Image (cartoon, rainbow, N blue to C red; front, side):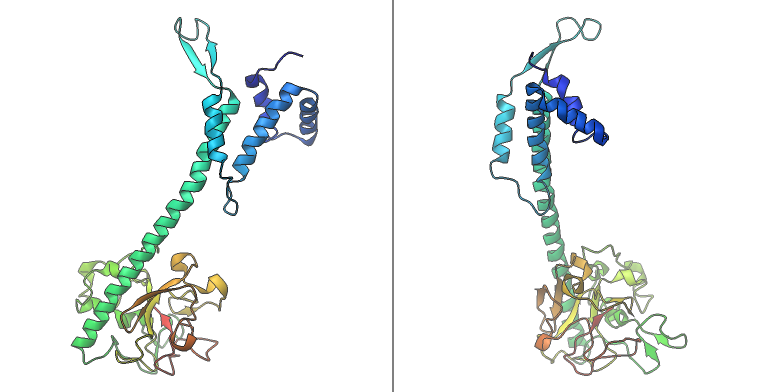
Length: 328
């Protein structure tokens, strides 16, 4: 039997991996491969390439020598000279082409680089966003300290009464005071001059326009702030409270614009700002910490929930200064 040209056998063999063929066609093609040594060699080469491509999953690492093997195959593969007819190319023009086997090897190497490189770029981006988020909270912490120095050693607070609610739509007759409104004085008083400091880089939120700040007493939209502030409807901490007390953080995943969603556990209990990996937290002492669990308040307190409360109607507040409930 004559040696088969790889460029002739490859298209039909590709149907085994890429083509929408029936079971009977697949069985017929496999029978042909089994009876033709040249075709079998081509099938084996394709199988190795697609095996390499199949290893590029999030949960599987490629062999350490895969890249070197691909490079060696590309370097040593013989060049084939193909002369076209005079009607197709100018006289004497020669096109150098590698076999389809080596084209696929190069494609596998490109996919390998993409499979390794893209996750690395995404991890670098997330680290940058996390660092930017931490820097934002540090700036907000400086604003809180400046507010305390200017307003009798107190934290930002716009007032509260029993008829108010921090949950939008909770009661038609209730006066809605979103908890984020308590931190708005940092902008209005010019203690934080850049509205983008209230937006986490990893969120699709949008900062409030600087020109609107003086004309308002609250953020124009919920998306103008990505961070939760301590619930001020109950017992409120002061700058002299426990310095480890969380006062601001990435957004609470259990609430949406003040409306309680559901209790969560595991990675789902972390803020959505960083893909469930954890959250940046600003403490009363001015430190910004990264925590992979919400159970990081004083004494292991959960920073998303009020102690002893299972249902929320918008009027609940902390019963102690160290009961963290960071909402916006």
